[in-house]
Every structure is written in C-alpha cells, then in structure tokens.
Length: 182
Image (cartoon, rainbow, N blue to C red):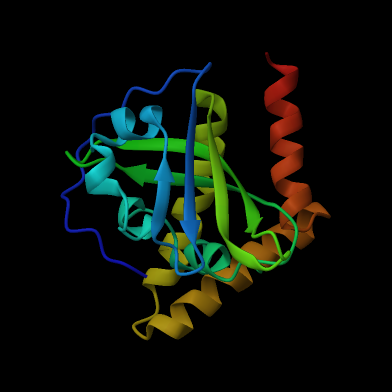
C-alpha cells in the first residue's frame, strides 16, 4: 500500500452529486487515464496524475483491510463496489462510492481497471465513516501489519455475518437506502 505524504485537513473537497470522477489504471494500479472532474477534485493536472499509483489518493483513515480488498480485486472477475475516503493534493478529504470494473484488450485479456466515483450523501458518509473507524481501531490494536489486516477483515466479516450480508450485499443495501432518500 502506498503511503500518502500529504497531511490531512478537516476540509472537504467539492464534488457535486451530478458529477462522476473516472479513472483507468493498469494491472499495477498506476493511472493511465483520468477525467477532468477527477483532476479538479483531486487538485492535480493530468500530467501529475498519470503514471502514479491510485493508492496515493487513499486517505490515511482508510482501513488497511479494505485497501487490501481493493488491491486483491480479480482483474478477470466481476465489478467491485466500495466506499473510499480519498485525500486531495492539499489534504482535503472526499468520500465516494467507487465502482471498479475490469478492463480487457481486444484478445479478452485483462489489462487494468476502470473506476467510476460517485457522490455520497452525508447520511451514508456518517454510516460508513463509523464502520471504517471501528475497523481502523481494531487494526491499530495490532503492531504487525499482516495481523492488523487480518483483524480488520475478521471484524468486517463478523459485522456482515451478523447482518446477514456478504460485502457486495452490504454495499447494495446502503445504496438502496441512499436511493430511497433521494
């Protein structure tokens, strides 16, 4: 996981409900495309973004176990939906719902990932933020990084099992709730 050297602030980046942030990355997670909205919100120009690992935009509040879930995405598999807290170039934070889909070449071989980031409503941010703080807190109880990730995964899986969900069902349940409040 890439460590972001930017100091977080308590200021939220501006990202509107009708906007989409779109990126594409290679199989290593290095950006090969980003749209203008991504550049504006993340406070970078295209030249600064391309070639950099997408992980440099993950906020330090992100639980390592969820970052691992992203990194372990099967490039030949199905889409992954995940709530992510990003950090901008100046340290502002931004919560988004990310839809990660595999990219294939003309020979149907995986070449990377397409990611579309959507706006999150404040009530969803509050719910996910609480969950992520719980997971991060559990991870911080362990000095060994591998043990920390395992502990975070176990806590998330226990929470999901208690709710009768797997991770995709959990994300969809929150998305359904969010759509009902629209």
